[in-house]
Length: 439
Ligand code: XLS
Ligand code: CA
Ligand code: CA
Image (cartoon, rainbow, N blue to C red; front, side, top):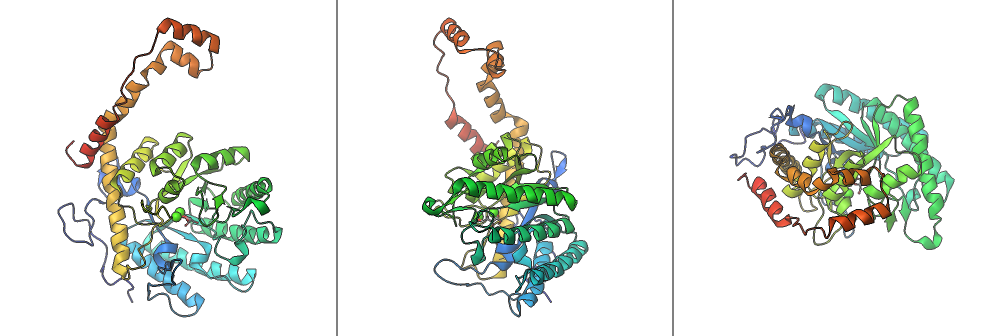
């Protein structure tokens, strides 16, 4: 039985002249770009929650998307969904997937029952991974949907809730290791506050670090060889989340002695919710050596919510691929489609359109970023702009070998510095020339 009859075997690569909406125009898995294949550069992952568990529900109405795999008892649904997921991911030709514990198996009446159900689904996922060659990019625990987590999971005022979260993280880590995942994500949807009037912010931040330390210790014991990721987000559902943005999360890791074990999973739509560009948070994470993985989606420029739309913005894709190429790739992470089709996109074909468009956007982004870096126009400009810092005094300042009085003397001897244009408009035109294919 097939859940996705619109594709017989696999979405083909047909190249830029193709008019087939169910074919790739730029994503050609085997094509070499700078010594690596596109598939190696672009470690796409399909997310289980939006793609297979998404119902189209929004704050104004329940589910609108009817999925064939979504009927029967909770465990029957779990089995059918898993089958549908591996069929879809294989047909799309993507090599990785990502999941929350509760996406793949329902919660039972007791922790023991929940664990049993999860173990059953992990076993099936393992078999399907083997038969399809699809790998797990990262796993995570859903510590935000159940009403018990309303006031936080690790940051809850009640240690019993903390313990429930700890139990979930333990089993989600077991599942991640069993399925060979190279990452484990902490996204703190409820790890924040809705009002400071009833919140002990200092202790809540300590509680969260305590859970992260326990996760690191436990992961070591069970042989996890991957990396932990924090996924920053400023708000939604909490009014304020403790992992606001990459800079905040990196500071948090340093404050609580977690920096060696964690990197960032930067999501486009979370960066924009924090009033940054996607590029900003990627550059902040990468320049601290902490860009581990990406959730590639986009928000809506007019409403600013976390709308998790499929990525179609070529500027964002070029920027992201430039950062990734410059840091030499993503060892433990990849490009996860944390994106969902719209409430009115009822057909399973829409799931293909969303992913195909996103993959093509990033494939084109890779080609443009690679060409720009090879030509070096933009990088040369930055080098020239900062050339003064290679002078003896520039080096002295950066090396901490000078002082305010010495610099005062030097400034006086130099005279008034010339005004040098930043050439932003020219450089934006050059970037556009690459994007439009005339360079
Ligand atoms: C929600 C987050 C979530 C994480 C995983 O906004 O993006 O889906 O990626 O828990
Ligand atoms: Ca999101
Ligand atoms: Ca995400």
